[in-house]
Length: 512
Image (cartoon, rainbow, N blue to C red; front, side, top):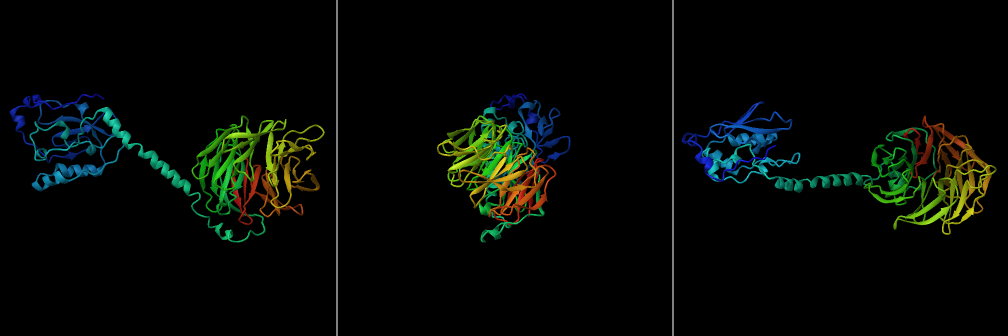
């Protein structure tokens, strides 16, 4: 639009007007509005046909011979509250109304689309103008509904002073929404916090069905902090991980998009305030649960299949995946502190044993005669192999679980059973105890103990969830949970007979 402006600093415009025009009376009560034009104070305003925006252009000034530059005057469409105020202003003709015009204040108008409201830009008008000057003496910029020309630099300066408040408001809204994650204790969990945990039960009925992921959900995990145990973490191949209210509403509390690849593994930190995730984008990330901000991001230079926190030093964690090595990182310095060289193709899972002196890694390396490198025990401090003669059957172990009370752990095998091992050297396998009845068939099916260690749960490639009596090696119940392969079963640490399951189709269910 042209930037030509009409100024009246000189008296040339006054001399160009005739004596009849100078003596013309001002009709202050001719303010009206119709769909095609608006006439107010002898100005006719009509919509601009060349634009679809609600801007108006001055067409004609009655009683004046010279044309007014259309491009120099703009009238922005105002809300109804402002039009009502303007109408009252234009129709006031008495002395009492003049006083109203002098003292009344225009309603405050918000900034829309980076434009400055009309009444915020009008200069202070002299009293003689309110009393009714000759139209020839009246400046163009004082007409009702017309705002003066403002240089571009001043417009940008004013817009910049207003716009920064919006990001601050959005940030406060996000913080308020994020603070709701830890604001209240779930009413369903609260009655069980004061009591001593009882015997674990077996879930049989569906409580909540959660469907928010667009890809397979690899793992689900309840928050280990008792008063926050209603929070449920899920990690998916759709590049996201989420936190849910898994005890009552089933609402998704926050979605985290810190990775550019599939999220393969995720776990809570012991404090319940942070999350550790490993992804196929070669990174391991520690995220703040409340704010969703990424605290630490470390590049492993290989696809991360599993990540495990050090039990006694949560600032240190291990990462394994599509590499022949396992790396230990310190999240405080963001540096790699240890490297464990196994000479294998990939690491499937990492399990710290009690005391965190040793840890076990499982791999997909199976030799022709024996699986001497399927399970490997490592000394955490010296990075030396303690034993690689733990499991001698030719099956890979996609996941492992440590018993919460006894000195033992179990390993999920692709032989469609779970095997029991001693968690102390020489880590011998108990050949008389096998938990059979489910199927693995190449899926990364996970297994988990209940808090009291009496029930061992496992998913299945058939979509079922299986619950075993750990001591009697007996199948207690088969829960037909999903139509697609069930990859994980997580038992609630506080609520009895409550568990969460996830499947290959991206569905999550809570049972009780």
